[in-house]
Image (cartoon, rainbow, N blue to C red; front, side):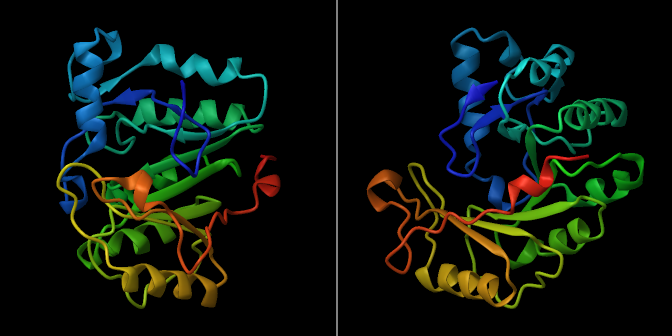
Length: 241
């Protein structure tokens, strides 16, 4: 586990590591870059660089946390990658169900496999399920997420590299928006962000603006319409199974 600087969570937990690119949102994958750094530092978990690996020992970790946590699951991977076996995914879900005092935020770009496996997974209120949607070419992920039995469903529109007008936000609880950062980030237009914020307000969906991004994301900040947007789903209601 590790404390996280990601604005919408508190810490990360990586029972799997590694991934592969499947859409334009993956182009400048931060996890791939970080994995190379960790391998160079001699961190055992990343000895195979960005190859998909499962880590049985990591399954024990959430049982040791004393206080309630908000946890981003697999910040360095995708739990629904084709190379992660179903039985391991089920083990991860059991750990999350066994620890209802924590909120577990799972995020995938592989919404098709998520939906395919949905009926073979046991959901609980503290498992939040999200999909990444970077532009209109992959909005079908929203419909696939909507069909799952996840109690809390969210969208991560990051890196936002195109407009997402007239989204169907039925049964979506939370939307996160963020621009791309790094050495050569693709631009995000303010109009895209404002339009999404207005869609969320109209549909009574919690809206979280993470960052403008850019080469200097700290300097560019996260102010939109003269304020910060830190809305989240109601956590207190999610702590019982």
